[in-house]
Every structure is written in structure tokens, then in C-alpha cells.
Image (cartoon, rainbow, N blue to C red):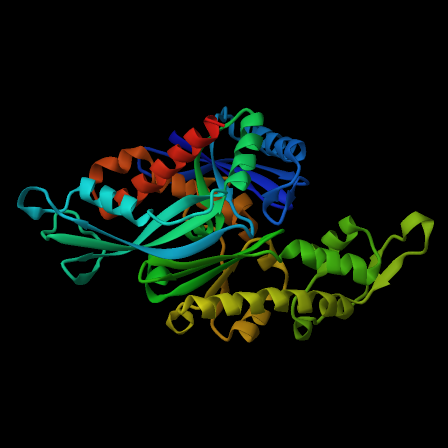
Amino acid sequence: MDNIIVGLDIGTTKVCAVVAGTDEHGRINILGVGRAVSEGMTRGVVTHIDRTTAAISTAISEAQASSGVAIRSVIVGIAGDHIQSFQSRGVIGISGPEHEVTNADIDRLIEDTKRVALPSDRKIIHVIPQEFIIDGQDGVYDPLGMAGVRMEANVHIITGLVSASQNIYKCVQRAGLEISDMVLEPLASSYAVLDDEEKEVGIALLDIGGGTTDLAVFEERTIRHTAVIGIAGKKVTDDIRKGLGILTDQAERIKKDHGCAYVPAVVDNEPIVLPGVGGRDPIHIDKRVLAQIIQPRMEEILEIAALEIKRSGYSKHLAGGVVLTGGGALIKGTGELAHMVLGMPVKIGIPSGFSGGLVREIENPAYATAVGLIYHGLKHRPSAASTGSTRTRKQNTLGNIARKVREFFDAL
């Protein structure tokens, strides 16, 4: 087994690490999984360095124990409501022999698209090419080798706070690890639960995590819009805690075991019995009442997502509908509620595509981001650099950005 890659998802409620490798036939095997409770994050951003570092260390230790692999380097996800995205455009002249587009030309063009005014506290995380235009001819996805005099590109630029990235970097470094790449979490999740056909016809990915809900809109094989919503599963737990007057741990447990996001979907209305606090009598909770607490908050999340999809301008181009993933997608009735609120086809996204190992353990929407980070690492590994394709150019661009981010942090 070679090409060992580790995906590290540092979430608001959990930290999970997934170790994978490929065999000589290119098949992907899950070698190890580690998970820990996260207590140092708020809405996807580090708010307590030591607690986050401890959670990372615990998850990595579990992953090392189950895989037998010594973990040195990880691909880490980044999210949070500080994430912003916008479109940019660049243009260059093709001056090489016979005016043929080379990798150097594509490099220069990508650099030109990054000439945008950014506040000093923000950094570019990803530059994702959407299409190239050569001498006015649009719709070009692979310009390498084409002839022309003028080349333009439309790109999707994703930025985040320098401090948010820096704090993630510090926590991972304190846990004794190196970051080989930093990836936007909804982009990573898309690798795990969406296929190329869905991205081509148009689809929205909604990753309902603990602290944030991440949205990514795809059409014609590329990402068109990203957004991070600062409301997610933790708010649902808080609503249950306050509404029923119970402990946070109890609220989280009954949300997972008995919660329903859509009141009409509650069939078995048997009461839930919880031990009383401080020696008091046991508490009896009606399942329908529990659903009546959960549904309004889930509706709010979905309504904000619907507004973001509309703002993207692609709401009428999503023939594939919406894919729900993340831990929040595990609440019963979420699919039915999403279909009602969004008015389009909905399915639950479960990571897939593995040939062996701990497959059952990660066939769960809660592991979409960590598994997606694995896919990102496999697709963007250096060995692909010799292919010379547009995909390789995108990969190298992201790799260069990650390297510059590391150099920037090292200089601090």
C-alpha cells in the first residue's frame, strides 16, 4: 500500500481523521479512522487553541492506532462564516512560438486573475478556473496547445481571514503535524458525494455540520458559487436544550436518536424518557414536541440556503437538485423538509468509491468532508503533474497557493 493520505476535518462539534491509501491497481482503501469531540471551535473557527490541539491529537492517535500508520502530514479543511467568494477575470497575450498556449501562459493568466484588491486581513484560499476564452471564443475548458493571440479566463476566487487559517495551522503544528494542503470544506465534501454527471447538469451541495452549513453550487462541471451559513446542528441542539430544559449532552443524544426535522414524518409518538437532573423525577418527552422544536431551526437553515442558491443565479439550472450531507443530514425527515423548502429533488450524500478497509465506518454523511479531503489529495498529488491537462493546472495552482500559505505562516 502506498500513497498514504490523511484527511483531517476540524469541525465545531467533532474532529475526525481518515487515513487512506491506494494499491498498485489504483484502488482506494480506508486504513484508519479517528474521531474526537471538538470543544475549541465556534462556527468553524478556532476559539481555543489548546482544546482544539488536544482534539486533533486524540483523533490522530486513534487513526494511527487503527491504521498502523505513523501520521506526519495531513490535508486539512477550512470553513467558517468568514469565507467569502467572488468572480474574477484575467487577460494576457499569448506570445510564444506559433502563439500556442503553454502551461506558462496559463500560469500567467491565473496570476493575473489574482490581481484584486483584498483587505490586509484576507488571503486567497482557492482560485478555481471556470472557463477560458481565446480570441473571443468562449467555452474553452482545456486551452493547452490551442493557438491564439489573446487569452482570458473567468475564475472563482475563495478568500478567508488570515487569522482563521493561521490558527488552524498553529493547532495542527502543535499536534506535531504538517499541513500539506488546506481545502475549503464544501469543495472537499463535493469530491466525496458528487459525481461528474451531477456537476455537469447542475447541483447544489449543502453540508450541514455542527457550527456551519456550507453551500457549493456546481454547473457545467465546475463550482459556480460558495457560501458559508453560520447556523447548523449545534443551534438545533441548543434549541432542544432550552426548549425542554435538559442538559446539552442529553439534547444532543435525543436529537441523534429520536429527532425528526419534519413533524408530519413522526409516526411512532412513544414518549422519550430521560433521567431527571439532580435526583428529580424522570422527564417524559413527546417525540412530536421534539420535532416541533427541531423543524423551525432546520427550516431557517434551508431558507437561508435557498436565498444563497437564488443569489448565485443558478437556481433554475440545478437539474440534479440538492445533495444534503454532513451530520445534520442524519436527522430524520431532513430530506422531506428540504424538498418542501427548496422545491427541488433532494438526496442524502454518502461518501463512496472505496474498495476495502474500514468502508462501513465512513459510509456516513458526517465523514463527507474528511473523505473528500482524501479524494482531493489523491486527485492533486504531484505525480499527476506530468499529464499537462487543465485539471493538472488547477491542481498545481491550488498546490502553489497552499505552499505560499505555509511560507506566509512560517514567516510570522
